[in-house]
Image (cartoon, rainbow, N blue to C red; front, top):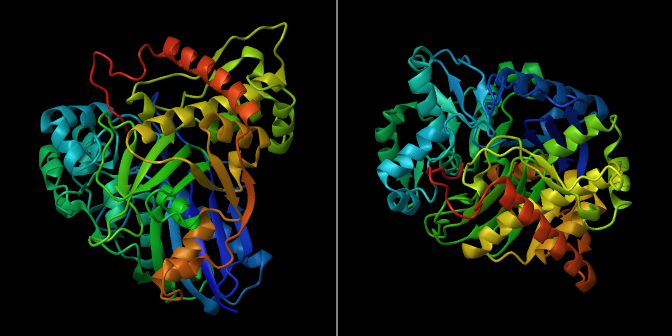
Length: 507
């Protein structure tokens, strides 16, 4: 028996999955830590984590995996990595981390991206980058240059979170074209580094790592890392991708018209497009998909809601640390629409779908004589779904057909209420599969290491376990509830679908 090992570098935890190459089945999985990792908030709308902590939890998860399933490490044919997107890790010439990582939900760089969008020209940015520079990684690096010049002066290379873990595994400083695009370091029109944006920001392209193919042997497990992990030195590192492109890959979403979703700490809908078609207001964003080539381009069009699983986690603390399945059962006891209670699930940094406007979470229509715990829990799940549907409406207006959506049977999609609200408010068919991000990374490693001749072969063992379809009766009820949610959003942020008098653009 031979194996593939996948790591998922999340902002809540690190997950490791071990796949049997021949059956495509996950034979063991481990998560570390058991409690969610801390996100440090030095100032409002900032968010940081220590990359060293990610590595330590990779070590811990690997040790747990080996303890639970005593596999022969010599039989691991490849290691794959997926990671939280848009983070900024800074490395000095000795390979040391210079400061905590500025992660995906940090909003400090918005003004730099907005100014670049205006001064470089909106048409230029959208036609070349397919996005506003917004609050992406390039703008975060500009923030460091302007606000922490003593740290900036020590930078040898910048990295995305997955690049850092790959560096710890192999000792090689690398990234991918898909990774460059998620940081707005990529020019889609020129198929090259976004030199004009770097020049505008005063950033040298020398700070970017070597570029490698997403599916390729990018390095090998170093003796030092192998000893720390208890694995075999020389094992190929053969795949890396951001969490949303990887989530799509894990669900075999590779071709135009196919759509994936996830409901983790953030909620995302990600559809494949073969044309460079940006949203005029950059409320949804386009990145190079994992299987894109010059001859056959594939872009992932992504809408993101920051306040998803993090809202559910917050509610769990408020209601007394109930298990999530019990929270789902309580939510199901309230009727559709939660008897007029509306939850706006923001409050975790600026939201791209709201054109990077700061927005707090809000609970509207609360009546102390009517509403109980079950109503709040249902309103929260419905509110998340309605925000996702709001983003899907933007995707549809941008030409992405959202009719059928695939997701892993995990996180928010474990809730029957969430699934029901998702299909009926969006009028989509939902397919749930027996996979997760770490398994997707393991399959990707198999493609990159040549274990599988093509991505198609990698999906042996992927099984659809549930299909949920909308019904006429529930569609009407959710349509009415979605209308109330939109009205509440308009009260929170007047004219949410049009720019405010101050230019503010998506992430």
